[in-house]
Image (cartoon, rainbow, N blue to C red; front, side, top):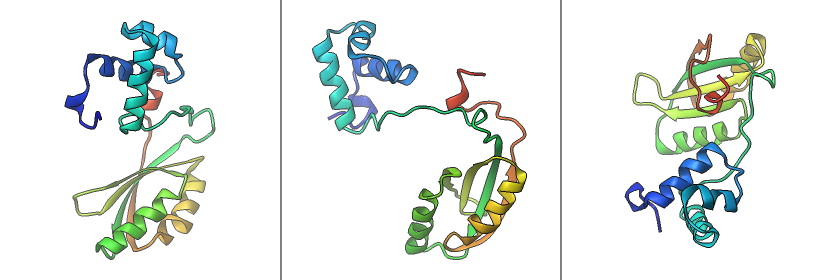
Length: 158
């Protein structure tokens, strides 16, 4: 199974490269692009999916066109950092759609969250009612993004 980067050969890497550009490409077109026939391409793709190298497929949505153009980065400090508290916080964060990303950080705070809402008023309410009520939150600091200079999902549209 391809579970490490070193286990991937040039065809596997080509499959991943093409799929990163176009996740909806047909097997026939994918095979043509990487220089293999359809059957081995399909077998490789299945192996990459089953081994967890390919996690899934989804549509990338433009948050700006959906009216979600307010982005805030939130430092979160917890009042308890034992494993049970971290697990409770992680599980709660995973259920909140406005939190696009959550990273545990080695710093003077514990987590950095990327939050997307419609506007400042909605964010203020979200901070007070949702983030503040997450398990073990002691305090927060917010940084509002003025412009996205580079975001992976928006890279082709800018």
